[in-house]
Amino acid sequence: MKAIQVSLGFERAHPKVWEFFREHGMLIAFGKKTRFLTEGSRVIAYVPKSQGGRGVVGIGTVMGAPSTFFSNDKFSDDAESVSYRAHLRAIFSDPRNKPAKPIRCFNKTVKSHQRRLKAEGKKQMTAWDYSQRWLSDAKFIASRKKALHSSSLGVRIPIRWDASVDYNKGLPSIDWAAVGLEKFNFPSPSSLVPRKLTAKHWDVIKSQLQAGKEVPVTRRLTGKRPSPDVSASSGSHLGSMDIALKSQGKPDSHPDVARLSEAIRVQQQAKLAEKPSHVRVAKAEKQIKQSKQAVAACAAKAAKLQEQLASVQQQLLDNDAQMAAATATLQEAESQRDELLKSLQKAAVGAAAEMPSMEGAFAASAILPEEAFAELGCTRHQVNELLQRVQQAMAAFQEKQASAAHAATAATTAAAMQTRLQPAEQFGGGAGARRFTEADLAELERQSVAAKRVSEFAAARVDQGPQS
Image (cartoon, rainbow, N blue to C red; front, side):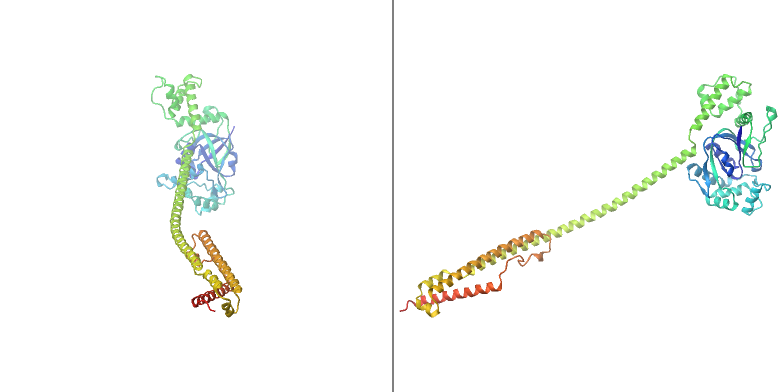
């Protein structure tokens, strides 16, 4: 079988970084060889002694296609990548996480290490000093550019850890001869390299890791058998019991070993099915962010509605003021209209009343002798015709005056109704009234004077009495 051995060095060679990989079921790797990490591949996680490690710390299986973590001088922004970078910043910004013994992470016999040291302008660096580039994305990107890597691709690999141990409990080597297998050395000069081994090699590594992970059981196992509930929920205690039973020489087919192995398998499957804690934290943070955005949007909307409400209230006040002014203007216009109608009616009545009476003129014409008409240079018939014309003209004048008054009243009323809110000065003067021409007025005045002269002459002859 084949397996990909990933050597954890530099910033990854830190106990808290390894714990992050174990807890979240993942690894971070850089370089072109990450193409070997395909779904279903077996993985051996190894921390070299030169990086402060103690050997193999875990084996597992790639559970999906690797996703891009870093490419073209840019980090991906998915939740797990963000969580990993934040975790590194928290580790390497706290002096309490600095190893007590400085670890020189560069091997000067390796050409790639020589290039990186030259790019940093240093002869040697410790893993802690080199890891300070993770304190910010900008520092990391600048460091990558200085190193002039041929490949800047970084990937995140989802892994199901079949067996793993704490950082300081790594497996440096195995006595392969004791188990009847060919020698298989873990150390490798490459950070990521395909390895060939047998399924038996894999099983031995797994059992050795599981044995090194567990805490020895101090109580006797020959007593009362644990209940099914305890065996299904006791976590590492189940593994301890399983190893202890096997150490007593009980085969895998023994009922106790089979029962505990099944409980361990069920527990591991449940753990794999559960979403990692960083995913749940990222989901909660996303919900918090969305809720904050929703609250901010509601607050902005409320502020906008308050502004609109204030504007509408001001418009209502302005409208009330305009309505009050328009009502006052309407009352004044109606008052002026009523006064105008009264004055027009009075003018029409007065004009009719001032017209001279024709009855006296006709009576005088009837009693005057012919000599009186001769002295006037006319006949009785001519005077009577003149009086009739004057009477007709007076009737026509009165009719015109009445029609003009009626038209003026109608026009003024219509104008007042159509312009109820117009300024009051537009309602004066009888603008719609019918007017006579100067020729009409001159003719009426001439005929009125003639009629008056006839009446005066007739009245004077009546006072003198009949003449012989």
